[in-house]
Image (cartoon, rainbow, N blue to C red; front, side, top):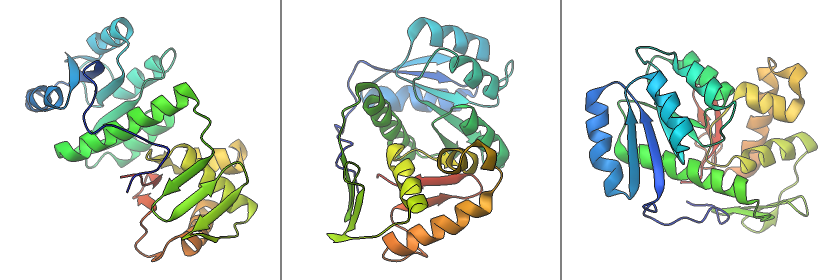
Length: 242
């Protein structure tokens, strides 16, 4: 499944630069082989300090960041890069770092992959992050979002499922359009609560559960096994685009 407003080529352009900040030699060797084959130009940093220096000097299109570096906390790197840069950041995390994932996303990371990860998962996450970055920077003004049989007309504020118009409440619509705006990107509970309900409600996660359930009941053919509105367990939600 792929949204109509997120066009892409199957292969990356050769001028798409990737900065990998990672101290594990096995992962560096793996990506050193894989990413150039997919058309990416790869730069590597083994420490956080070197990563920050290369990020500033090279201004890469995307950063892959290991959170467990020997010299600097990965969250500090996100914080410092976000002071000046808007390029996508995908964090590489261990399976037991759920709270760390949430904090990294809240600080401005775009997505995460859990170690050990497969190359297809990583490439899919990179494509989505790069597409979202391109849309944000070019402001294409596309007003209709299409994904499978779901269509959201942002201009007319209408939602259709298999060409049948679906009535959404104001909050349901705002929740859906927030997910559309960041389609493919995982949004934490706090990020969604802030966007939809405002900064005073970032701890009210029960609001989110109730409205997400209502939204799935209206938009999913099988709400128990959603195609579109996907739960990132313990972290947040994502509008699936792949």
